[in-house]
Length: 234
Length: 164
Image 1 (cartoon, rainbow over the protein chains, first blue to last red):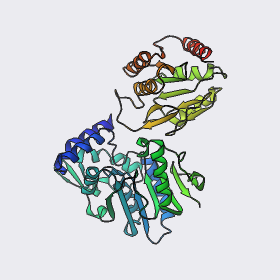
Image 2: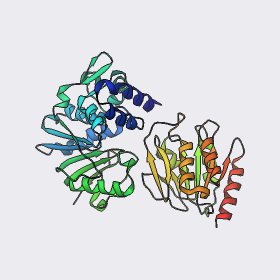
Image 3: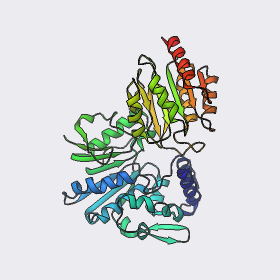
Image 4: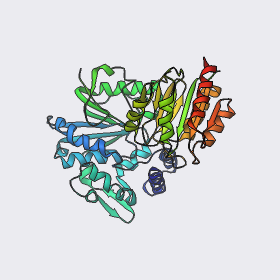
């Protein structure tokens, strides 16, 4: 029920951020399907903070890929975790999606204020060290993410169904997006992820997903925490 | 087509019937069983496994549908049937339910037609239109509606006899 409210709020909000009517329509189709908040899976983010950040810290600079990032909520959540752990100033996050309208919303970093206010509890359960409200400015009924967060995120169009690997990453996050891919397409996406991970690179999937269709799944081991985070061994 | 798989939709407050069914189910039951139930996924799976003679797996997206196994969906995802495999879906709740029994039944009817067998434990609005969809495609259904679980077990035993 909560996801439903989030989706509708964001949908009503769309025309005020984008003036491209066709793009809005495509986006609304998609928002009808999803629309969870920024901290809807605090267990994963807490695991990211406690188990993954210490591994990332061993690199002089960190590259992260948020694939199929949609309207970008999860990207900002990751940015906040890294910022609080003191790792953000040497991190670059690449956030991609095949849908340009969704990406425009993500890049703008503007969300309905009421939606973010409901995330305060999730933020705290994810180990948040401050107040979530400090990461956005409220303008009327709009919450605008702080430029401090946006500075290290690069948003770009990329289609997992057709595009190849474009960089090598220490961490790839693609959570619950492959659910809507058919098996051959999911297999292809896993191949692109594999080509984009160095040895000991990590891949984070959604709570309901697995490596079953990954062509090189034997090259990975799951980390004890968070759930569904896999490390490439060879 | 004979019966190919059993769909169990379990509404809120009906976990007790699911436990009893798992406890009394024949270890020889040949068909795959797919369960959509509200509640804490892994805790529920462990509890049911302690009762059931059949192996119970919490579904991950695109798992194959296997005979002599109980597949139970994780919390907060819709559980859908494709031909030969299971799909999870993070769509918005339907009739306030995620997982939605209607979505489970309707997807099974689309993929398996009269091979789908639908059983509903529940008295809410969720599940009845999905059962109707299975019946429309020629599949068999049972809405428990206060009947004893032994009726459901008898129904499943009959389905299994005809499937062999």
